[in-house]
Length: 68
Image (cartoon, rainbow, N blue to C red; front, side, top):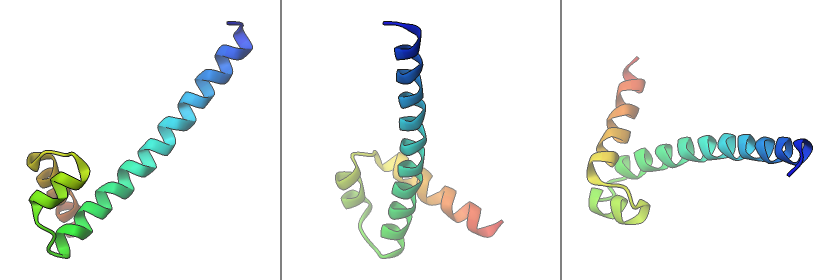
């Protein structure tokens, strides 16, 4: 592994982190929309693999940001 290859790998990693952050935000918005649409929390958990507590935090975080 030379310096240039290592730098390219690091750049690819940073780009993947940026894409993951965008997707994380999109998923959170989709979870909030599913909650608004009346999708059962159990079904949201099954679809996402998140725990009920994680889903509650995401939904509540969205409600808090809307009231600001």
